[in-house]
Length: 488
Ligand code: ADP
Image (cartoon, rainbow, N blue to C red; front, side):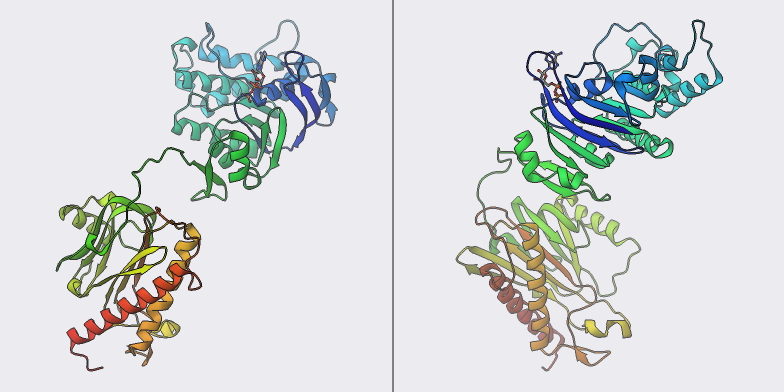
């Protein structure tokens, strides 16, 4: 355990690190973040004893670190400094061996089995065993970095201080090294303090983060309390947005460049749609931010082509995703830039309409096959048969994520109402249907023009989506009924 209290220190008259206090527990990884020159390395140098502190105390396992002898300290704390270009003249093995120095005793120290084992393990953990006889100067920067990590691990100290350990490493080696350190912290109860350049890596691998700003602690806490839009903006002077990691409960940042990557304003209109017996397509020059439950490229993304493809009612395929991707490429669509849906409905019966409001325009496109409609409230008690209502909501405006979700709710409610008004029944339960069993919904926005923060029916956008989806769905159902020769 390491406890830093009221630390102050630097190089000239002015202190670089000012009044820094924190504690790191056994088995914990603390990441130090902060912009260039904020004092991260200086803080680590003071804790390492490389730079004398002006005031404050460092406690290691409850004892003032200044009371430890140099060798005792080295048995407690291993340090990986920032890699600089040196005139190296050792082999990898010799360099890692040096990590065992604090464990040698007496004038004529002997090399023990324990020393041998620690070096062997450190070489293996850093995947450097096969380079053990290579001269260090012949290795790449990333490989040299791993040698020094191996040296620090061989030291077998309960506290590990690392200054940008992933510097010079490619992403696979960054992952490997940080996985190793994480595992060492867990298995051996190591206490780790590491300076990070990369906020996302720090967030992923550290239990807690300490953000330095101008020599002082700006914030300290779990990653979600430290990596926030406002704090990163304020401390780093960089516009960012945080997003959740896809697999871990850790925030990740994305830079928001000031330079517009895409061209200026543009709008989607009904003219951008094409309807043929094979598909309904929307193709535009600029990508739309899209959230959908499509077959191909579902979820959130940016796309320029949207395809609602006709398939026969008995379409059956083991790998629908792969078949759809192949089909799109065969038809000349670029599959990574295309969202693809399927419908057994005659695509020429699609309803596509523009709805204008003060803020701009939305375009709704619906294909509705309601022969196998389902009352969702009775779905548990019934057999499922496929049927599809595909609904697209295209918005000329800027929507935040929550407005995409609200647009989906509004569109779904409007669809359900249309089925009710058209008296569409679930043929198996003889109750009013609410949809079909494989309906798809897509909301896409230009992210240009007006800011439209909400899309519930209390807002102008929500009103337009509600009306438009209702209107198009009613018309699509009526067309379907006529085509099937239904009487009502
Ligand atoms: P960081 O690691 O956050 O980039 P540093 O701790 O390296 O920041 O540097 C903090 C400040 O201390 C900077 O203004 C830097 O110029 C200064 N500094 C760093 N090393 C030295 C040194 N050896 N001598 C004098 N000033 C230094």
